[in-house]
Length: 231
Image 1 (cartoon, rainbow, N blue to C red):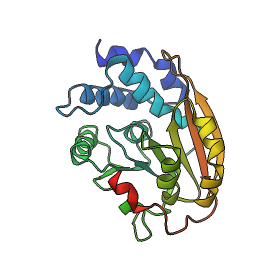
Image 2 (spheres, rainbow, N blue to C red; image 1 turned 30 degrees about the horizontal axis):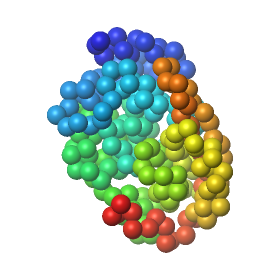
Image 3 (spheres, one colour; image 1 turned 90 degrees about the horizontal axis):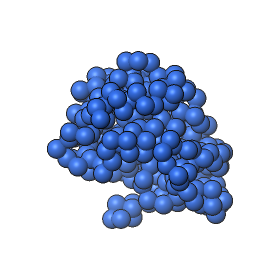
Image 4 (cartoon, rainbow, N blue to C red; image 1 turned 90 degrees about the vertical axis):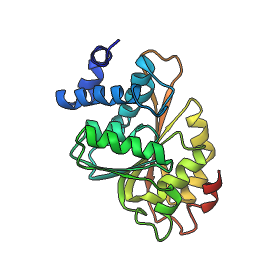
């Protein structure tokens, strides 16, 4: 099935998040770039690419309002950061990806899709967000998907957020239990658990979750720990 046909299956999502025709077309182009990439960017393809990749990423828009500056930590193949940048192209989005070949793929996508407000950084998040890092406590919105466990999501996400900013972790079926168990850890990092939202994707039986953390105080300088560099 062609990219355009797949995109046509999910027009209700386009309307739900008020994505213009040009930007919806670009999401189809992005899916096509992934499908034909020399690098095995993701195991997802076809319907799974749209639902588990693109729609899952777009669900972030259900828990955040407007933002001026966002960062996606561990962007991989562009989920959710690049998808959000396509959906909201006038908002600044920084993509932080440690693996060089994936960072190069993201650069190619940014160039091909003419995303002038997107920057790609081939860096470890720990270096970017350390006490002397340029990205520390700078962002209105921080997204983290498929980067370790819930504790690591909080430890990498909260140092990047400004006071009053949000961290959105895209998590699996146990997200509510994880959040309940780690409330004290989130507080230690300067955050609070603001919301856990279940997300149902069209063809999936399992439920995805968005865990929203609000930054309420500065993150102590010892976090994030550099030990993650070896994990």
